[in-house]
Length: 183
Image (cartoon, rainbow, N blue to C red; front, side, top):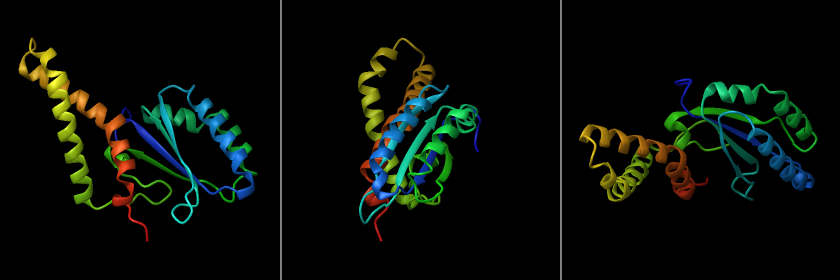
């Protein structure tokens, strides 16, 4: 793992018994609600199975640090909910823990194998270009009273935060078919 203070993503992939999908959907809602009460919880994203593409559910949990993730991963609450799911699933979950930029381009449910670097670079470049133009237009005017180095520091901080938590997860989801072409 990288720095203990950088955001961490856990990707859990699991195949569900076809007759139990409704129960599993309720289970997802419940475990997500419980996870959200833990310190450092940043959100959950659910990727549902798609015929011919992905047979498993993928649940992506994000926490603000490894320490807070560890609290959740070792909690009695999590263990309880995993036990509740055992009768609904076909196999043990596949769990990946990712941190930093690798989490932007990870493909849930498979070994961490990012797409080709040129695709990651192109999408990152486009996202940075769009975001820097928006920040320069709407934020920079409010920073003119600050020295240039402080204004740059603020813009860079906003850029990294927005890229990590908002922009790149959406870009990766939007461009997933291009990043991860099917067989």
